[in-house]
Image 1 (cartoon, each protein chain N blue to C red):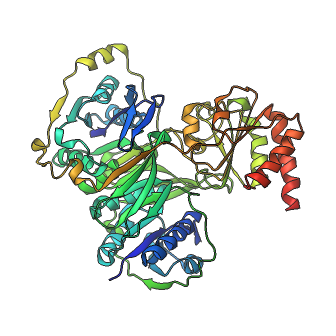
Image 2: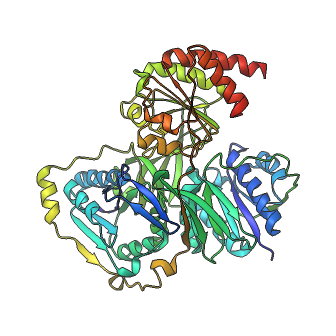
Image 3: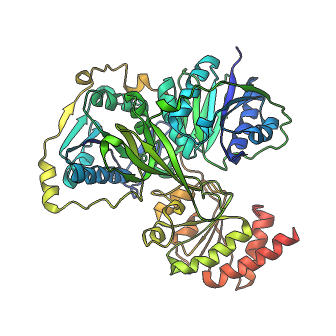
Length: 260
Length: 329
């Protein structure tokens, strides 16, 4: 199977992120491979082990390629970086256009991505790429069963109140969620090798796109203003002994917070 | 043609989801300000009950009733909605940040070449009809106000429990039936089964009250006391990453960055230390209660009310106290 995995390097969940001004954030220099992308890479590698073929990791980023190296260390065969100064300020739709432009002539069976990137938390790029390529997509999958790729696949998707089981023809795009598998930890040897692996670079011209297709100008949606998270009032500690503290809590929830 | 504000209505077995009524209430506010009609867009099969409950909340109901739409797939919804959106040119299309909304809206927005703000926790409309969407970024470490380009419709999905529902909008919708474009043989994917989760509890993203346990619960069977408390409050039960990774609770109940973000009216955390992964998931809850034995637990920094104490003593007593209090009501 020919499998492509869309990956992204994002700030680590522990990284400090603060609003510097209306239009700027201060982001601590602590990055990791997007948590959900590792489930996608793992799913791709498992299918390659079963059916043969190739796994290629793909990112759109002008600077950070460590997610690609992580993919290679885990076992991906190839890594592609789409990079172009014109991509600065792109929204998710422009990123999807760049990815789809690269993928459209490739003989892919399956495209995998994470549920969402842990920076913009949008979950747009995956379904948008599927739309541009005219292939079906299923979001936030928890299960993927392939007996014969020619006959399509069975995927399990979480919905409110249960799990939905879908049959889907290939080629398709799925976004992956925690619970799908246990991503492998790459061996040190492979990490070293990945550090030296060659990453192929593509710019917009090579993809047949212009700056008008990507970048801030083309954005359909923009940050107008960054805001700090809403602040809670200082905690009210209920210091009475048991069981008075429980009675007080119920009273506060009813009379002060008015939530029950 | 005057502009309209549209809401994608979601229903299960004829029961319309609360988020739909929230969005119709918000839409009614925008419509007053900008003089636009509010339309509910309803797709599915056998929708009489849903139409009835939506009627007092919208000016129009656009209805596509077809057996092929009995369960949601993005293919079937897109084939039906795209031409009809292009024809009517609504100024806004809103949906819930639900498994359906998050699956459909990005694809539909790409198809329509328009802007989409996902998973919003607030929406406002300026007098010129421009939508401003507030949404968390980086798991809720910062928020952003998003502005849309001129492309229409301005699309957004909104978290459950963001708006209060106004049951007295006093509308009486005109129902407009649209013929279905669905050709089942052309669909590339179909739902072949649904495994219902045990019990009748709402998903933690939908519930107005969520109670959760962490490592302090000590053993999976001890979640029983949390469940009993949840029953009294008609709440859903959430869990931390640690308890999910231990296999004590299901992945679907995990709160936090690698699980779900919740916007409950009331969230109660028992035996939860308050790791950043977890507290990011509860940032938009209205009232937060924390109970933990450790007075220095980080969770207290993110709570409105705190008790330092033993959850095994406090939870059963709280259940009893609430039983009493809620029957007095």
